[in-house]
Length: 195
Image (cartoon, rainbow, N blue to C red; front, side, top):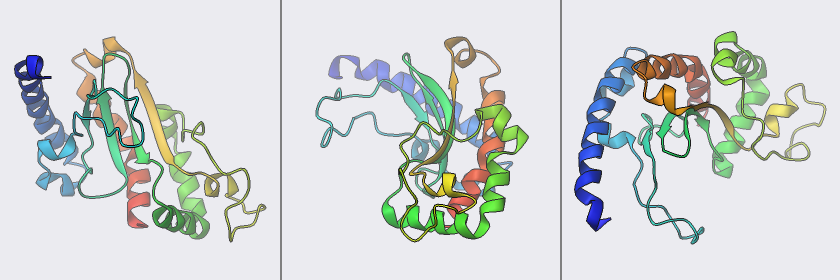
């Protein structure tokens, strides 16, 4: 890192200036973002190797997570030479938060279902990411016959759209990010209002 620190700082400064523009665009849809600083939307470059010692010391991506310091569920943009994507939601929340989300789905399942099957959301993401690990049976306190059991069994509530290099380097990237943000915001709002 020491040999590349100057290059890294130059690229990071450019990234933060771009995020300032992006935050300005997205704040038109959520005034909470008006008080968010670009530096508060990026993840650290160091990997946490406490439980995964085989990870490299440093990440190879730049991120944008506008709710990173203000809410558990968020929108996310990750740019990397290996894999870039946009998406969001709530990824593997702690058990107390997961329990609250499940309770909200139990009470407001019709609303949750309409959010994750809304045409704009499905067009942007293809729906919720169902490849994430889920419970094999109903969570404690819920019937296997619950009309929204497939959501109650989930451990994460996320949606992802992978981006190719051409899209990432295109002038229309921020237009695509804004559209993806608008599409996923109802899901983020639902998850955050039940925390």
